[in-house]
Image 1 (cartoon, rainbow, N blue to C red):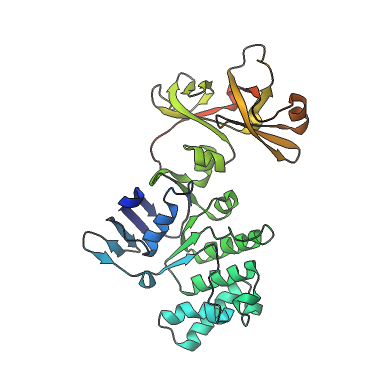
Image 2 (cartoon, helix red, strand yellow; image 1 turned 90 degrees about the vertical axis):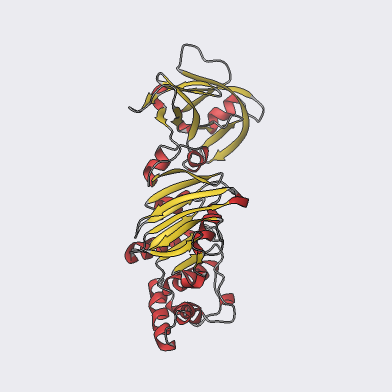
Length: 356
């Protein structure tokens, strides 16, 4: 079993993290730059020593500041796959992959046999004799995946593994990683900003903000019921937070009405969530009495093929047709009205953290 437990603080970075990862699961770690995601990976890998805390993997203590325990990175049974492949330039692909088991004490023949097995697993046998400068970005990342797994780690750390790949290469590597993780039952912790990585690879998602885990739940729950502005943005939806009132949320842009969860209680913290496609845009105040009418200033326009995403200064976005955008003569600085039907707005309670 390779269950991971982390409870650690790094004072200078304002980080206080508490996370458990069940054996065989893949957890996506999301959050804005500087939130503490890379610090989390560094603590688990043994590259960063926390001021206070405990790191356990598969029942082994890797870090315990109370007893001054700190297992060095190469003895943790943890492999890190980064954005860049970081292959040894003077070694062939086969030797790069064999390096990890050799370092763990396997004899040369056994290490090469394991390397050949993993090269076959990532469909890279034909690359065995090439050196890194002879590999494309996608090929190099395949070799890096094989090298990480040839070490037979209890835990795989993925740090933006597709970020450096082009759009034509990333899907193939993502599919490969999905297959490898599922078939091997490997426990993994993955830092990413890419929604496709989360959907394709992860069972669970946690969101880190200001050095704390602020959301924790299944991928479906975090993306469809976001509790933070970051998770709403990565899910491509709008989120307005505030205090719950009867059938709505009192936000900084006014009360937003919608369909409330059963546990919504007036006075508690809550969030109103609705997709940009549910927002209608008017150049003049709308007639009648729609439930949610927001007066906003256009901040930017983003073309999306047949539609245009209209972002307001308050962070709310509307997705309308290009014809509608042309008719409204939208441009940054223009004042318009966003209108959302209450039936299109989902309202839920917000707690500091969910899940386990």
